[in-house]
Image 1 (cartoon, helix red, strand yellow):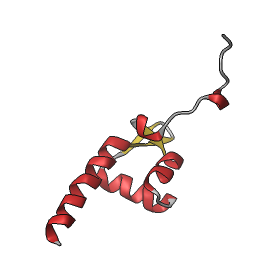
Image 2 (cartoon, helix red, strand yellow):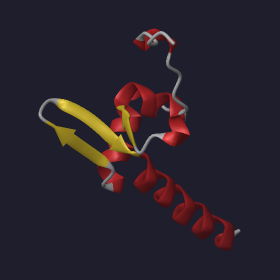
Image 3 (cartoon, helix red, strand yellow):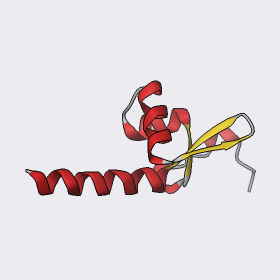
Image 4 (tube, one colour):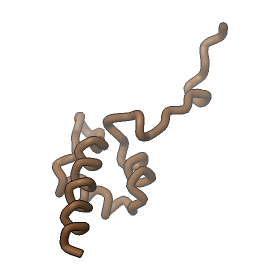
Length: 74
């Protein structure tokens, strides 16, 4: 069995805990500036040196909590 090259490996975004900013923009359906602001606001922004990652679990929890609040108001 031959080793796969990096280009052949497919990872589903919902399977990853930490997303790059580009991946997070796709996952959340947001532009770069809005995605960064929301990640900072929710406490989901995670830095490793210069690398900026977003904690998908914290973002999902934030979305769940806010959708319940809005659903209760309407």
